[in-house]
Image 1 (cartoon, rainbow, N blue to C red):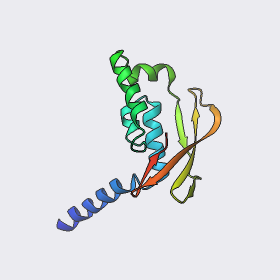
Image 2: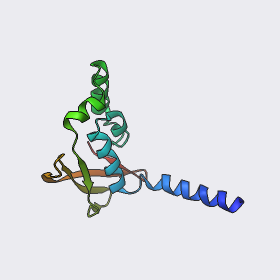
Image 3: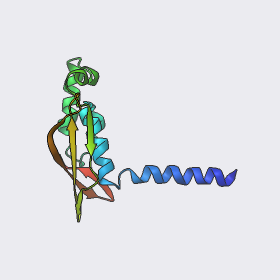
Image 4: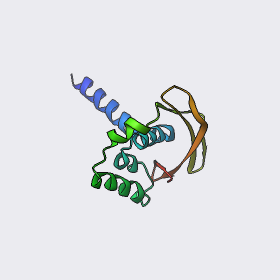
Length: 126
């Protein structure tokens, strides 16, 4: 029983720890939150000191009585695909992604999201 609990704890800590050390996973979490109009959640993945714009957007939506669900009905892409062919050069990572519309058609090809490694964690450069 003790070994099972210890194994579960190791798995849990490993799973939680790797989420910020893989630039593709950070990019995917950020993009999913951003395109769901969950700006406060998305801002958690931005470089420290660059979160104000998304936080202000979230506050503006709240003041106007607009919810992320309201915006998703009209504007959210059907799918976000993050590719695992990103480039890491030193402390920067370049992760490519694409969006598809509700018809499943790719919208405008691939985009690039830039991330920066700071204190062992990847952060989106906004």
